[in-house]
Amino acid sequence: MAQLRRMSAERRPPRKTLAPLDAAALDRLALRYVERFATTRGKLADYLRRKIRERGWEGAAADPAAVAERMAALGYVDDRAWAEARAGALARRGLGGRRVADDLRTARVDETGRAELAPSIDARAVATALAFARRRRLGPWGTGEADRAVREKQLGAMLRAGHAPTLARRILALPPGSDPDLADFD
Figure (cartoon, one colour):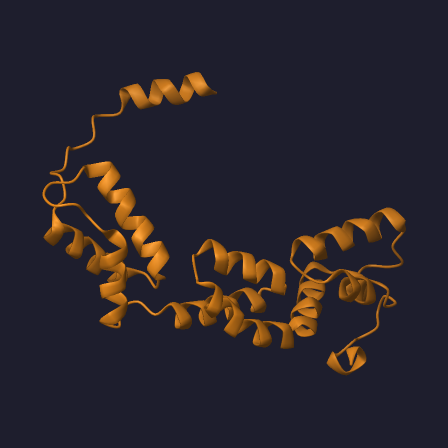
């Protein structure tokens, strides 16, 4: 397999060599990126660092973090709005608070931004866990009584999705065919 990759890489035409970046080109790259993608300051700075590494740098020392901060000051990058949108999207997919927090940390949303979103994530914990179980046909939405091995697999799936162990066990303990709602978990 590795040999096939090497061979195909050898047959590819050489990549067009681009000129090294300067401050103006870095600003243009940043503008183009925020024009196309919703992002955070940290992700934008990482993108700019990668581009500098790939193409090289010409001129005074580059500071991608300062460019990202300038884009945020101009209103092109809003970490809080991005984090709220991302947390909502992950919650709609049924992912739990731990997975949402990990995703926000990976996207380099700062600690205060994650802390501000934590209460809204925790308030939706039961709804997202039920949505995940329904979508994956776990617990009460399963096809019948599950033996111990199946229950352990289902519990593992809910834990990997970021749901609290006690909540996951409560959902999986519900009898098949029941229709739980949020009031059952108060």
